[in-house]
Length: 236
Image (cartoon, one colour):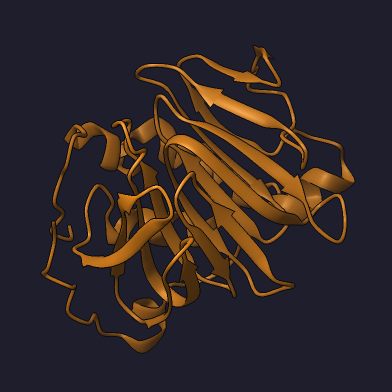
């Protein structure tokens, strides 16, 4: 089990992958053929739903399908795991996000996170972005953890767990190339001055990324190389 640091979240939120029910749901998803089979057979692309969530304002059922263009909201003690194309997502409790369409109906071009947090694994493809109230992350095929904190400035956090991510704000930008967790805070100094500051890996684990990667027949950078790097230790 990899070490992890919590900030404003409970350990159960990052250890969800250990639950027997979750392991069974993931095994069933993979055995059934994953995304391609679900799309061909018009089956749900929800791997697991725990608690209450809404899809475009209506109650979300486990047999529903999350499509590009949808708005998702999870309630307290709720979480949602789903797959679209070659990308997989795990949405934490008390989150609100929009999934916007890419070049096809089955490709996500933009994930707009308004509140809460999401762990995501993205396969290679056309340019895609994660957008929060204070930062934008351009995705090139990677694993990412993103969180928006419910403070007065909607402070945002993004961790490039592996891969290449172009992170930018209204007044700052950086290209992150990482094999093992390179994180940034978007810190609002003034209305038009949001700077990027380095941070440590919080509220997510290696095992979460590995779990989500398996759902789309991928492996993390450290699984491919057989070794893990050193996490950034600076933080606010």
